[in-house]
Picture: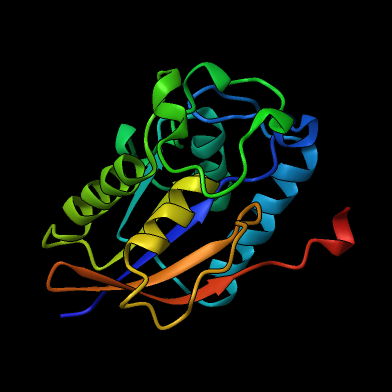
Length: 195
């Protein structure tokens, strides 16, 4: 039986505005980020999408996003496996210090994670979640690199191909069946009216 996973990135944060490497460190949502979350929540309302379960990264920016998107009316579980890429000593530093893409194992030498470690951590977490019998339509709020890494993990099965860059509050809709995911759609919202 096919199940549906909605995996989304958090709203804009203070570190996004300041061009800081966020990773496992955290920054609060901005006013714009809060509005982005409200618009993403409206998308689910407009399309009459009701979740039977919801999960969030343990980072505050992801938890706040989920609470805004669901109107604070849904219980959810925080999972460390949905956290962003661990960038080691680069956490909180200026984005200009990032190496050129792809990052690969660059951050491992600085106490962070390798790219494949990130992909497998997120994949293992979401596979465990979606394999639960009573999980048919699930919301999971995570982070840009985590969402991108997960999309790349299932690249050969995806109906929609992920292109570089994950916008704030972007929603990745996956089908899950027999232990495998397939990206069906990427929803990017129009925030031009609130910028």
